[in-house]
Structures are given as C-alpha cells and as structure tokens.
Image (cartoon, rainbow, N blue to C red; front, side):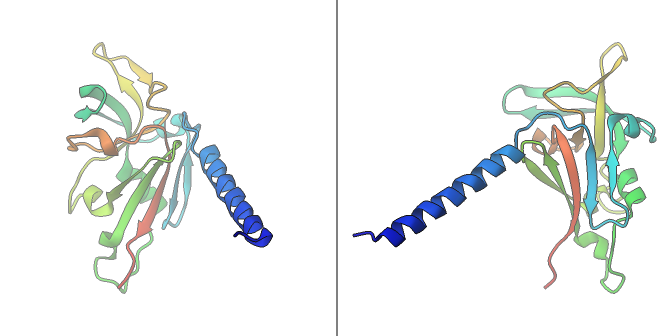
Length: 183
C-alpha cells in the first residue's frame, strides 16, 4: 500500500520529469537558426550570420552523399572552411601534453538537438586534411548562388568524403570545441 508521502513524491518526480521533457522539447524545435555560434575550448568564441560568413574567404564544394529519404544526392555548396573559423577562434591546447590538439573534437549541434562529432585531426591539414565546410548557400547548374533552403537551414556542416550524410548537419546552430577526457 502506498502512503500519501510516497504518492506525493512520485507525483513530484513525475512532474519534474515532464517539465524536463517539455524544456528539452522547447529547446529542440528545429528550424533555421539566425546565427551560428563557435564556442567551447577556444580563446575567442565567435558568432556568425550568413552575411558575416560571406565576408570570409569562401569556397565552393560539390559533394555526393546518401540520405535515407532521397538516396544519392549531389549538391554544390558555398561556405567557409571550418578550419579557417577554428584558426580565427584559436583552439586552446595544453602545451604540456604531446599533440594535445589531437585530443580535441567538435560537436556540431542542430536546432532540433541533432548532434554529430568531427575530430580535429580530420580537419587539420597535416593529419586528415578534410576540407570540412560551413555552408550557407548552394549553387545550381546555371551557377546561380542561393541561400540554403528551409530543409537545410541557414547553415549546414558539410563533411566531404562521408558516404552517408549523417554528419552533414542541417540547421546548424552551434559548433563546440571539446577535449577528450584525460586518463
């Protein structure tokens, strides 16, 4: 038999859990973000808009990848190399740890709370050298540049070489630089 105290405790716990779920749902509504934040283990956190990104050295990249709903997709994106943004923000490293930069990884977060990880070693030219792109536009067959559509948001992470598009994070709102835990 449940006592009134246990019933009250169960009710409070249930209420707190539902509020946490509601808060999480409120934070994960999806849709396009008006800005992209680069933060975490960097000396100078940065905030970008599509217009601000267009002021950087941009590059055009054609990629092909598989999606679960559309099969093979080939698109040409316009954006800024992620490495340029990271170099400007200056990734913080510990000089007492050998190759500390190799312990760093990037968490790309979307507005719907989707997350994906890219290691720093993948983007560094002396290791993986992948030209990961923060895209803000596409280019069609006629060469006309247009902002990303509603399905991709204002920013999209492009990871060339990936066969599946799982790390092509649409509706990108945040890139957080983190460090693997020490042993």
